[in-house]
Image (cartoon, rainbow, N blue to C red; front, side):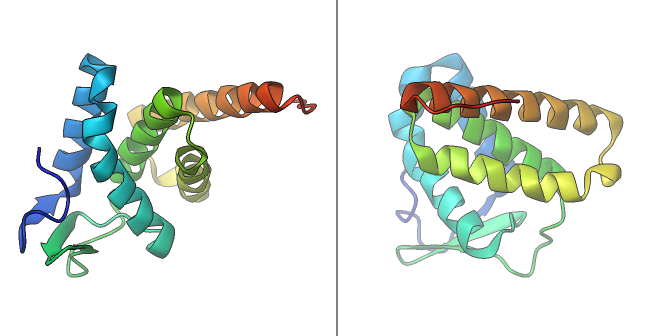
Length: 146
């Protein structure tokens, strides 16, 4: 996969990008540095809009949402949160934990709309979130109670 911004005008499926990132990170954690530009672009776009669109387009050096595509596909938010968990586990960089918290906030607000299998994924993500926050609190030597 090439770096974001190097393919002008190309339209990319968010699901395919997230699947590629997940696959790369689960097979070879050393791929994090290769995937980081993609993860960071998606994080930046989510931070700005609090939405994940089904497609993104490269225009010049900009990575933009294809705003003509839906942003309510909840499975994308689950995939994105799973990538955020892995990115934080591999890097310890707080923006990944931050975006995980925000994605889970979004998903929690619509949890009744999730299918049973998606509910299970959300539950797993919440367990991961709590473990990551607890580990961070321990690292910073601050009291954390559940």
